[in-house]
Length: 80
Image (tube, rainbow, N blue to C red):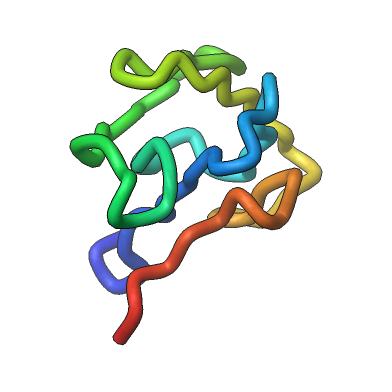
């Protein structure tokens, strides 16, 4: 996975659950400059994980492509 990078997700909207298509990702809390330290989350074999910093609940959705999420607005990419 070294050639793809790690997906990053944010929760500016304050949604209760973000569905993700990856079991390994980073939670940044909100969009910069209001982000929290970027937390690496590895769900392992579980289908849900909670960010230990902002308490956002992430739920694995196998129907989504790797790096995708619902709501779509919760995906974040750093400016190049």
